[in-house]
Image (cartoon, rainbow, N blue to C red; front, side):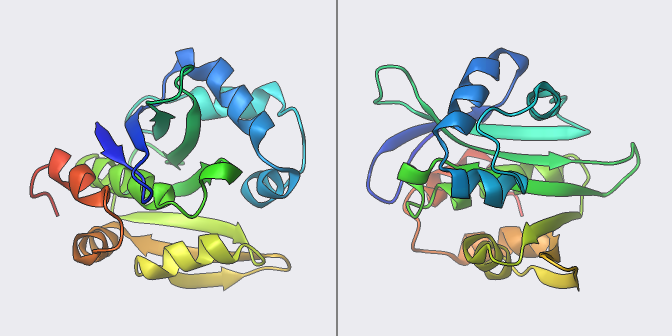
Amino acid sequence: MHTVLNNGMPVCIRTVNADDEARMRDGIAQMSERSRYLRFFSGFVTPPDRVIDSLLDVDGDMHIAWGAILTDHPEKLAIGAVHAIRSGQDDDHAEFSVAVLDDYQGLGLSRLLTATLLINCRLAGMETLDVQTLSENRAAISLVKSLGGQRSGTQSVTSDFQLDIKTAIAALHDEKDTPGLARVLAAFGNFD
């Protein structure tokens, strides 16, 4: 689906697939050390193959993933991705993660990707997303709280949240500050 970032930059949001390995590796390499640390809890420059394999092992049910492609870039640059991974076949919840390249943070992309994922998860029968983030990751915590996420625990360096998918989708429908969000929501019809 085609939409725009807050600055008007056009993006295509589409499902992630096994053919995206080079884009995934390149995207992670382009993240700053700080962003890699906040997303992966590690500052690795080159991710281990097992991490890439896990991010690309998308089946649309146990693992749902969407990516954003910058459509006006000559190389169709991948600038962000979002994932929901279930731990068991009958689970109505999944682990949530999102990453956006540094140059595109603060432009509403996390919200666009998250909206897409939330609706897809709801259609797949999920009710809750579990979020574990480093306690210092204020942007991630702010995003989750703005969508109705509730703190479910705190460990030494991490904060855990539960995000009710239906509540989060309703919060996104009420939002007016992310221009491209209306296009994302419209792509799925009047789904709530």
